Length: 103
Image (tube, rainbow, N blue to C red; front, side, top):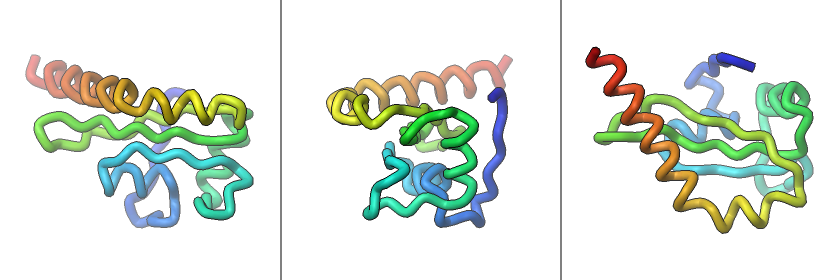
């Protein structure tokens, strides 16, 4: 998948929640706590995974988008141990987008 667009009006979507809050969010297909929207479930099916990790791309207080990873349940604990690195990855991606647009 190259490019997917989510409307910010889809407030139930984990992807949109992550973008609006500017926070890394994770959810598994069978989580009762994290209700996934229909769009999130479609994304899970497209990725062929059990869960989603949404990493906001934020630099200079500008949210440039979301990086979405599909994960299997066995990977969730490892993802939680990498939150700082994933947030840094998102920040660097945002900086690169900003710099490319300046060219």
